[in-house]
Image (tube, rainbow, N blue to C red; front, side, top):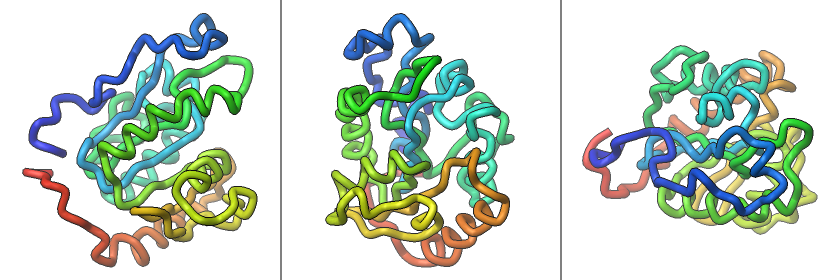
Length: 212
């Protein structure tokens, strides 16, 4: 991690009391911003916090919403050094975040809520400047495709794009299926693709890090 980073949780000190979406303010328990290494070359983007992630205040944590599955996959790849059920995982070269920062207990995020949260995600992408973005699920893949690729959003299907590499503007996308819908074979395929096609080549650029 960068030498000047003091905390993994919401390291950019984004608004923890955000009230931009009136329908969510009374329904949520807390705002869940990004978590991880601010100098990361790998950024993982989900749709929104699960119940467990909201409870922990950390994206992609806890059982029931696939957090442990994602943690386990990245532990196998060497990015997570703690147990998959850790509420505050020990990560290196990795940052977890979501399209939206608040959870409604009864429904998925609306398009307006995704649009309202976009500046948070855009700021994280600009400040982290990742080399690889992993969109987890169809919605993050399509949202990122609009902004960062030249392909039409409706040309993407996460089932077909899972465990492949898509060239974006300034970085690459490596899509992952929703962990709750991913078979063991598909999880293995994602890890194999990362090892053989991403980690095996020189994707890195110098970004002024002092240590990791």
